[in-house]
Amino acid sequence: MSEPAAGTGTGAGADPDRPGGRGPRRPRAAGPTPGAGPGVIPDERRRPLTPAERRRYHRNILVPQVGAAGQERIRAARVLVVGAGGLGSSAALHLAAAGVGRLGIVDPDSVEISNLQRQILHRTADVGRAKTDSARETLTALNPDVEVLALPLRLTGANAPQVLRGWDVVVDGTDNFPARYLLGDACALLGVPLVHGAVLRTHGQVAVFDAARGPCYRCLHPDPPPGRAPSCAEVGVLGVLPGIIGSMQAAEALKLVIGGARPLIGRVLVLDVWGGAVTELPVRKNPACPTCGARPGPAGNDTPPGWSWEYLGRRPDDS
Image 1 (cartoon, one colour):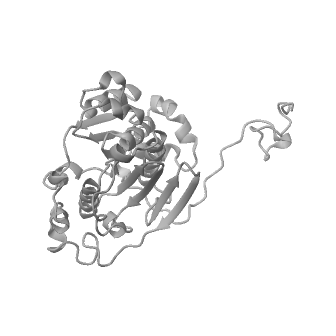
Image 2 (cartoon, rainbow, N blue to C red):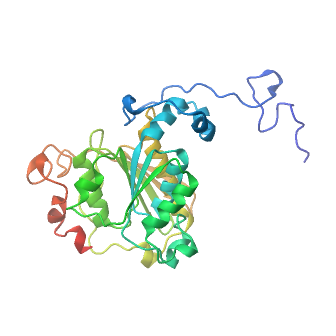
Image 3 (cartoon, helix red, strand yellow):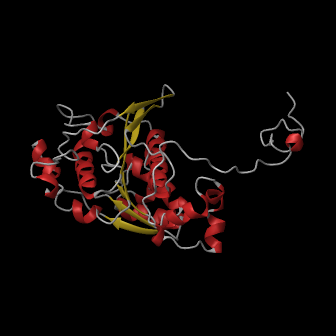
């Protein structure tokens, strides 16, 4: 089959709104998005983009939903990624490429050879190095304009308030239920939106938990599953899957930063990558939730993050 001649209006780059369909498509103004919410970046933190920034982020700025104002918010944003593994690798790379102003990476571990099948922040030469050091080097090389803060520590109930406070958005790149409950409870009590992601074998999911606008993680999972949940180290994960879900987490974080979008608040997107199927599950805020309900926690709103481990009968240090 012969390809259509250039300028005939039948090619992939044809613009039906121009005479003869010739030339590239023009960007169209973005209409309001149903269910859209405001961005988390206050206008007073914005400043005009430099000519160099306009050149670097030109493709972002061309997107009607982003524009120069949205890119200014991205540049002013402070995003924390907890976990520099499969999910965190993909999310951090995309956030750095997008131009997030300050990017924090929390992870206590070192790079292992078995990580490299999916953790694309790290290289073979990084085996044995702290993941946060490897991540900072890779992200800084990708975009020197981004301030990368390496935090080589394990998040606990004791340090969570100090570590999580001051960030605009937190991205969950952890791989176990104790860490997810800790992040979910702490972010809800601190009022920080949390972008959740999880993967196992060929299935993944992504959601946004913002207790100010919808449910928290504990509304979805009031209690951990009975028994010991399997891990990727035991049952495996298709290497590309964390990349897909991590990219979606980065997109959700950028939507929260820019505003005007419909984040996955009150919704969980479930991907079956092997079957090529996507399912959306609704999640409602639980008025009796011990974290974000009418009377959160056994001692009310003043209960510091970390109490939930006693509620569960275990502490994060025991995981």
